[in-house]
Length: 378
Ligand SMILES: *Cc1c(COP(=O)(O)O)cnc(C)c1O
Image (cartoon, rainbow, N blue to C red; front, side, top):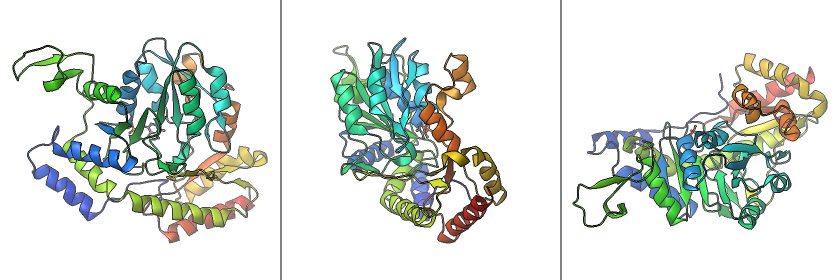
């Protein structure tokens, strides 16, 4: 089966992990700090705090932004559940704003209508690796004096108006799950330019315990530690960070390959009127996390049939993402079907084609050829 996405690991990645295993520190050591520096430098952000997963990183970011019981965050329903789940962890309520179907990201006009006095943050999601409408969303957040957080799990390496994603929001989250731009197995990070958020993130990742210069009590001996908030053990290991740093050195080549493959799909598939292809607005450069095609409205109900035929061919197509509020857990919380009609229509017509750095042209041609074949008989 050709997967919809997978990691790219080479010998230098393996050597980096082996070196970390032979070193003194397997966790809380120099590799984590070096990896954080590499990501911060790449994105042009002042600070970066690595976490055990992207989800843990989001949990930390929401907590640092002061999101708590009965607060609301405004986010996209067309995302992986974790974006909203992290708000539930804190007793807050995710409110979903419908998307703009041309980009797959939240529509700032819808967001503006849903902001109220309980709203504590706007959480933009860079669907498929394409930066959301960041300038408009940030302007809204500033106007209402609330935090602007970017779930960039899918968009490390993307840019918006010439600036790399990672320094544009108050806090930006990247994920290092194997299907994302780079991998550490599991892992995530928050980048920020805000020193107060940075300090809170460090505390949250390590049980809420402060040491050294961070303690509030005066004149204490060197062993002294104090727990200031309820935190978690959300640390990334040095073994993972070593892999992450090696992968960072390959990131630009990964993005280049993804972009070349996306352009090949575009050239091959634009002649099919049955398909709606993903677009890249002129002010953005996508990290092409996935290649999300949609069937035209008349054919949308054939999506699952097409999906099944491609799977029989050994092509690991996927569908991204089940609108979060349609999951049974969210339905049980009272969220209603039909609430974001643009998102639901988008998802029902969507199919993600295989796209990852090591996908060969031969494999891609096979995907294109089988897709064209099945379209004729839909
Ligand atoms: C992958 C992903 C996450 C979760 O990241 P993990 O590292 O798997 O915890 C959150 N949001 C989006 C949009 C994602 O794609």
